[in-house]
Length: 70
Image (cartoon, rainbow, N blue to C red; front, side, top):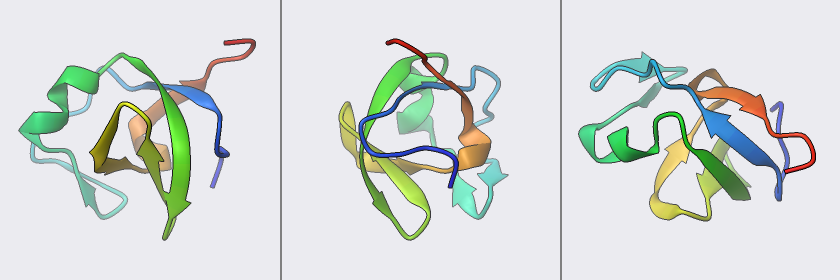
C-alpha cells in the first residue's frame, strides 16, 4: 500500500473500462473519476475507498500520484 487514509490522490486518466488492475476491475460507473483528485477515507483488503464514492474501490495501479500540499 502506497497511500494512507486522508491522502489526496489523482486517479489515472488512461484507465480502460473492463480492464483488471491488480485484480480490481475498472467499470463504466467509475469513468467520471478518471483524472480527478479524490480523498482516501478507508483501506480494506489492500483497496482504497474514496470520499467521493463509497460504491467503488481503487488499487495502487489505478492511482497516478499523491497530491502534495493538496
